Amino acid sequence: IDPDDAPRAVREYLDVLDDKAFGASTPVKPKFTSHSDPASQWTAARKGPAIFAYSNNYLIDTDHSVIVDVEATRSIRQAEVGAAQTMIDRTEECFSIKPDWLVADTAYGSAENLAWLTKKRGIIPFIPLVDKGERTDGTFSRSDFEWDADNNRYTCPEGQHLLQSRRNYSDPRRKEPKTGRRRYRATKAICDACPSKPKCCPNTNTRFIGREAHEDARDFARLAAKSPFNTKAQAKRKKVEMLFAHLKRILGLGRLRLRGPCGVQDEFTLAAIAQNLRKLAKLRPKTHETRIAI
Ligand code: SF4
Image (cartoon, rainbow, N blue to C red; front, top):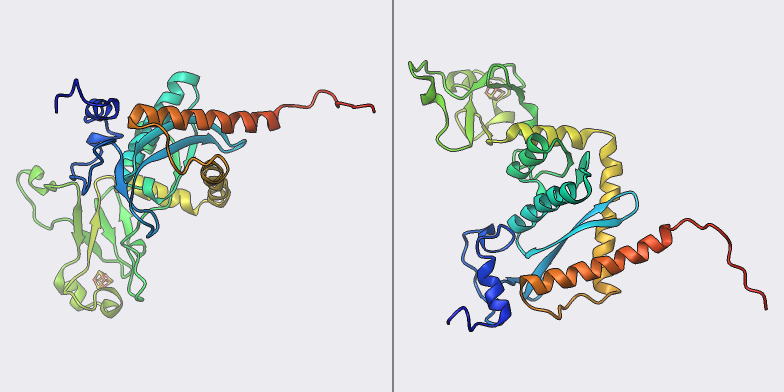
């Protein structure tokens, strides 16, 4: 169709094709696309029926539950992570405030996002990680291996070193990984002679430990998760869930009236304003008692 003759929602969809909250969030081709609102995402939440939907993302002040920023995105994880970064930057630009720490759910715990938060913005992340290195079958987990950044190696519970490579290349760049992920391992001879082998790598010759490109940021998030403040931070995260529940159940925003990314953004922003007004009215200090005489 001629884009100039297309309905508004379709024109807006074409406008956001390169936007990281919409078209550029993933290279995966959607299974179904709505003809009347192509920017929406065919998705099913919690094993419910699939629907065309958008995601609403809030950045809130955890002390008072005041919504500081709102961003509408496609309903996929990558877009929601991009929205969090957009909102943090926009809040700093508009109000000159930046959070010292951020609490969010596992969806925001990707290595790239943690690296962006910690290294680029200096924000402490209280975000649970998806840690595939933790084992539940009684064998050593990844956390049992100690990382030694100075020597670029892991030390196993038996005190042996797991190295990326044992070769001495004349060109050190040959040791650099071709992808962001690096693998560290002990030698077969060392592991064969180890008394803990059945508890470490019972089915393989030697033990490998993988290290992602931004593993230092993930390590920092693991440290933050162990800090005493993490329990408080996770309790405060419920405040944003309560706002979403209020939005759907009380304000009835389970269904949208307007189509297209701009229509949805407008609707989400108006709903956030309504929620903020309600909240701010409660926060307003009481200067005097209102008395009614009959
Ligand atoms: S099996 Fe190898 S890696 Fe595992 S504890 Fe023993 S020496 Fe260390």
